[in-house]
Length: 421
Image (tube, rainbow, N blue to C red):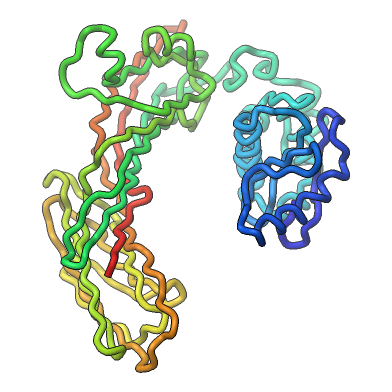
């Protein structure tokens, strides 16, 4: 559905047990819930339930009159967004209108009688193209992946040089609380990680990945060295789950090209990698002065790249003046922010930014909310959890030699400093 004109752009009834006209109740129901402040991801009209997500200016809605598996429905809706974005680069009203035929073809292949089928965009692109002239030719030969047990990888792939690149990426979610005297404390923190692959391997290789997993070391009695306790582990469909559950081995035949092999969460107390202190002083409604100090609390041999400290300022501030010990500060009036950018921030270093703004003499009747200071950064060659790739074994019947490459990256997720001043 389109948000701009509130009409149905395209629909597909897979089972025929819900009347097509039921979707007409969705937008009035959504607007009513929004007005009442009761908006939720599942809404009902009679015995019909609407499960929906919003992307750009579109609503993707699934209807059911049964006690359906909600997590499966939402996983499919997000997969739709991923596949359509792969095809059309941008998923919005215009891209749907311009590609009606391809969208219907995709909907027919993605799901059959209410059950998800082929959802890998790389495989779909082998026989559903955006060029109408090629559609009929492509249909005459269905890839073996559609009927194969390995539906995410085509047969006959060949590379001159066989390599696999492994990226271990961790995002830190952290909330710091700041009191009047600028002393801070960690209010909440966790780590969300993912292991991404770029596979350039010939044939049908089997890969086995070993991590410093605490459960694995406990099973084998080798509880030595630093281990990591992963929670909420989610795998790509290529991973043999039964093997992982029995002996914690991550064994799989990988998709070709780029893919996310797994994601995980580590619920732990995280030491802030970039410590922020802030002092904001207002002077009789004539000016405001802001002092922000940033300190790198990570190893001296590591460097944080493209650091951004975003400091909120009053909406009526004007005449900005800045002084920084490093980097550049700029005022973004449309967002009521000062953005302090530091391209290279070595560990152990401390930097300072001062900002001065004029304020109108008239006092605001309503006190403004106090949004948090947020921080963005990326630290290569480093993971805050200490997770490590211990080995990557590559087995293929032709017996070729392949090189695995591993890279570690830590970056900011929801990293913010909340002030009470």
